[in-house]
Length: 216
Image 1 (cartoon, rainbow, N blue to C red):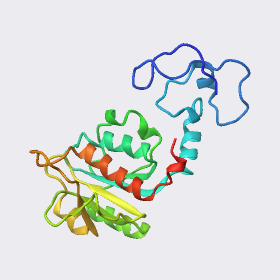
Image 2 (image 1 turned 180 degrees about the horizontal axis):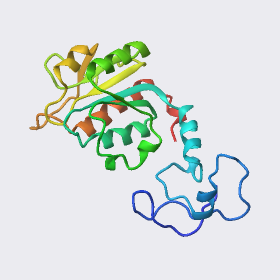
Image 3 (image 1 turned 90 degrees about the vertical axis):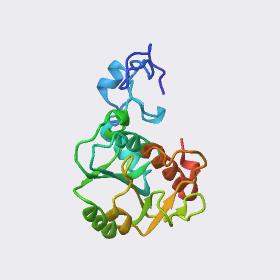
């Protein structure tokens, strides 16, 4: 890997990344001539520096986990970008957005370019897709009767379902889940930010099912 030249602007407007490639260019077709020429300032791990976007996605597809994540988006939830970014970090197979198609992508920090996304008009459509794909739906909500996430056994082929900030999951979502888990809290707040809760739940699945030897 070439360290490149001096740092410059990145996709999130900070000076990190690598400059133009120094020396003979690699012949590997995964490399992007424009990035080799101009430098790669993207938010990607070093293994994918200078690679074309489609090549990065193809490589990620060989590493993705059988974990899916869904979040309801009926009131333009601003946490979706954070959920997408975290899902990318954990190599989640797919992020499902239920409700409105439009969402604030700023929090995704451009990771939505590398993460598979799927839209569903409503919860019924999501549940039908999960059943067809053989995914067990696990709702993450601090509702009465929920199991502790910290001690629950999460299914390997799993779809973690999150509600919106504030109202939480809709009744239809709660009813359609095979299991509901909650995150243990000890302070005065009634709930955890939806983006943070999603990250905690995804990591709980990683601890139970991921091969840590393949982590960067």
